[in-house]
Length: 299
Image (cartoon, rainbow, N blue to C red; front, side, top):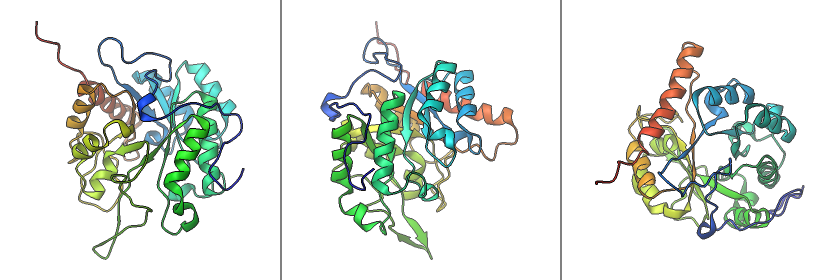
């Protein structure tokens, strides 16, 4: 695989411009017909350190619409046939592939553009809708130099929606250090698609409602979570347990009949038992459903 943006093998061409987004979800359902019902996925990161199989089991039990797979060092998260087997076994689709662009997954799938290409290929192979990627670190100078255009090239060449996630500054000695290039904020950047993460927005002390409205049709994916805005860490609290206007953002998306995937990405590592973890995941799904339910029209 070349260390340049381009077309991976075994992918299908297509048009992923915001004006031509498909309105079918990963299960092939038309979400523009009838009452608005968002597509809510459960991210494998929400069950960490458990793996992909446990995420599928929880998603089925709780009534999620699909699974978002974060590609990590766990081999099952990387293997097409293993993921396809889980889809068939549980009759639940994979809607999203999160590329291994985190600091802790830098050794997964080799060089930077290889990660993007392989994530796009995996997305097509398992029938998912979108790839989530992080912006480059500033020390990845060559990768960062053509990242914005390179993401577009891979997206157009493969027909896969590649959505760049908002990040946050690192704070050292009371000062903000911008470690992402071109910036931790996707606002003002020429990305076709953006993933909005409420926990990251809290750490960056950004206004998510203003950002979601500014992004408009470029909003390609949502990570449903929250943050206190009081720490330098990435908290991934349950939605509604932080300071971000998460409910208002979901209500705005429902009012505009947004057709993307809402991926629940919360931290459950501090749960005291499997039962509490399940309750937290159920609460997050209920939050998404409640705040995207439009009121019945007046008679």
